Amino acid sequence: MSAQDRLTDALYGLGWSTVKKLPEPVAVRLGQTIADLAWKQRGKGVQRLESNYARVVPGASPERLAELSRAGMRSYLRYWMESFRLPAWSRERIESGFVAKDLHYLTEGLAAGKGVILALPHLANWDLAGAWVTTKLGIPFTTVAERLKPETLYDRFVAYREGLGMEVLPHSGGTAFGTLARRLRDGGLVCLVADRDLSASGVEVGFFGDTARMPAGPALLAQQTGALLLPVTLWYDDSPMMRGRVHPPVDVPESGTRAEKTSVMTQALADAFATGIADHPEDWHMLQRLWLADLDPAKGRP
Image 1 (tube, rainbow, N blue to C red):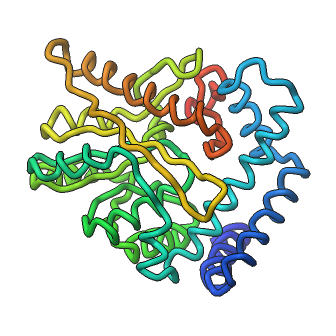
Image 2: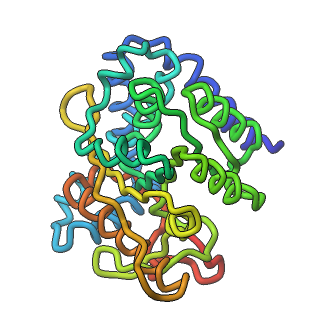
């Protein structure tokens, strides 16, 4: 393990061991302070965040984009502060920390016994939403995690999410899709963050006036298993509470090839994601390249 990897792992370990012990108001202020410092330094992540917001809010002035990127960094650090503290939250704190609109799409879909796929963008705190599902609703689910470097950091994230009641599969390795399909055929729940393609083989979609690429997995799983595919968007308000909405199902088209159906369904997901991002752009934590026009051709991926 390189010195940089050891440092990265140590910093995350410090976050989970120390931040979770802080009183909530102290953790909130700490997150805002770190966010403001990072925003003032205008590193690559902040610049990319601002560039992405420029697509979401076309015609925004430089001053407006600066306001958005500062709010975006505060939202991003709120996510991290909450995530570091989630393992120490009481059941009551988790249950009161999230309110979801149109939850009936999820509960009715599971009651039908054919499995449900929840697909989310990088909005607000998807880990908190997951902990709420396992705690408040008592519904276990399976998800996929990107393999991080160093491996010890990936192991920390897996342990953290499993501690919140999630089954976590590695994104790489080729076996995740089959396991997810089995869980869905058994009537289970699968949750996938699905607004950024990690394989460079995703589906091209129109997104805020330009072309991006998003993963095909949610649409393919729905076609193969008959599971219900539901987009979900999340956002913060000015309280300690997070809010969310379960969108109407994305149906499998009645005609077309598998690729054509996948394209139509993934576009429908992108459209649902766009509504939530447009309403709450500062809660979209996309600090990486997303649109094809922004990708490095030599790398061929975000």
